[in-house]
Image (cartoon, rainbow, N blue to C red; front, side, top):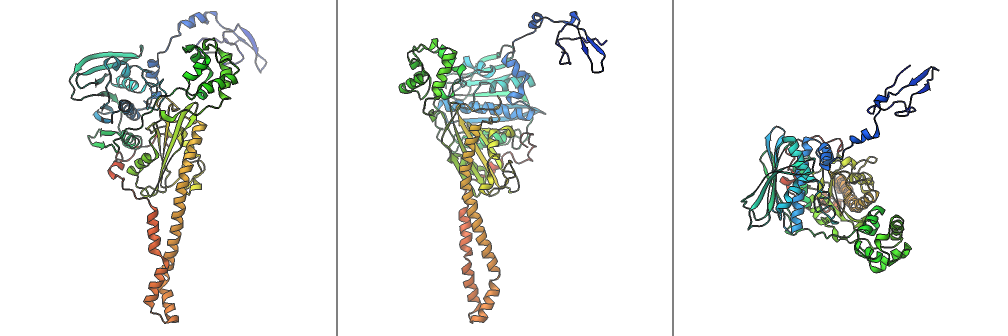
Length: 588
């Protein structure tokens, strides 16, 4: 007889033996009897198990799962920290209508330990909010705001503070000033992960020779390496997508770069909009119905959703077979389900795009020209579409030929709400859209569903009220079919422009090759004709050379190339002075 002792830690491995069952006999294939016995002393009651159940705090969860926020390794942690601070600074300046001036400094303290300092000229932060903004996860003004902005959950900068403290034990040092007439407010803090709140270690007023702004200083374990996934590349691409910002960057080697603003005009300010009816789900609708202060269903629909006029609201209620005078609080699950059906059978205008602030195809193309010396550029801005009730707009720019290598995969630059996406390219919907496009149709080599091969750079930017990122670290776009389709349409629009150029270039090259071939035989032809006609051989050579129209063909070929006066070689080489680091597995 074999005795099996079951415990709560190790459930039975025999799937046909019930857990915590009474002793039973089981026949084995050999015919022998197997008796299974469970000791009463090993049993644990539901009440005992319940004593071990504990609520997990949001800060505790992310402290144990830092990789979800972009702190996977030391190299990536440095980039994520800078990214979160710079994104916050840009958002704050734009909200206040201030042209951003941001300083980023990385100081190497010792091996694998760095100090990151980010300073901006934004509106500053009031004293009572400083602790919550920098040391409370899921705190901020952006989560419920339906307009384009870089941040979403109110996690990023708090997570950077938490990571810095966990890896060095040192607090974050923050100084902020809201008014030139008042002193600045200085605090040192860490995060109490059990309470998800700030632990203030020092709180005092200080003099600061700045009219307004915020400065944060963090010590953290990290590693610095130049290349395509470095802070250098992130800041360079940020300068491309934010031409209204001045960014001063000092790298760990104490080399300073100044990304001067290319535009004195702030981007169009995104306006907050109400949710669109097509994007609401039944659970959200039930909550909205219970929380509203409106007295009638008609008023509820008009005042809680965008693009719903009185006529549209009446049509929705008619299609749902509900009274427009119903009290919203009286509508529960069945009524909400009928209302959802009524919404989807009613034709409602797409939401306003005032909530978006795209880069513009012209500025995106200018950004490529600054970094890439190419022979042809094309850019496209698609009209906004609606995805899950949220407006979304796609912009694409291409740079072809020039000093780009022709025997390697095309370079892909991904952006969302003006923020560069440098990691997780393999799992990104943008990458899937690019590889799923038939580039052979546009004269570019491609093997199967892989990246196209050739001297090509592709930049894709998505603007949206709510970007569907694959994780809290906001490194890749979810593979949503509607978004992928829209990106493909933009790529195809730009691809057709590229195909026109490639076709003209090939035609001009063939004519030039024929002219060069004919030119090689001019001496022999001229010699033979001179004998037959008696014409001077030199005259015949000159006339035959004119027939090739070679100079015209060379001029035509050069005319096809775009003239790029915006190329900045020193800008293009930032971050590339050293050999680039190996990409992470996702990139390869």
